[in-house]
Image (cartoon, rainbow, N blue to C red; front, side):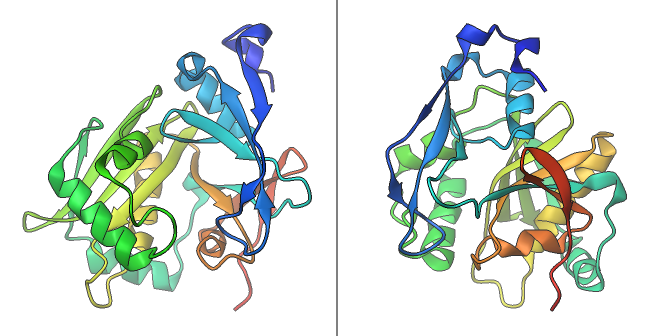
Length: 244
């Protein structure tokens, strides 16, 4: 796979960051490989980068490149072959009444309020629970690729927001946040299922879910969606559902 299909070799540069504390595994140091300049990373280029294990945070495009750890595995779901488990079918039925609408990336005080509640409840002390409005905008509302925002409402009340990138071969799930205080809700599961269904409707092959980390509670769930593939040794390989 070559990045030269869209840009010359000299136009895209890659550099390694200095080590920083890992967000997922305690007491470890992480590093990232960053693709620049951001303005040259169009949707076709970004689609190839995602196939090579990159993803983005705002206009910052990166992939893990740690010195002594390979725990972060890029993961994608084969949307057209996906079969929901019994538990996933229950989550789909539970939230099927939500009304989803597609929008361009846009700032909205209602979104930001939900984002803050979600971070403070679900990811307290995770580094994003104190994000100010500018940090939130830079993270979710800045993009040089084809992106859309999906809002999910229940009788007019905002329950969930997703940001999704449209790629040449699929969808990349950028971030989702939702109402954290609904008892027995399974909005996160429903959202992944909804993205798989959208991928099928668009006749695309994959939903890219970012990085699977086997020993991270926050990231290990992703292999529950089958069939799934992980990028291992530069090759997309089957990842089996964990044995419970």
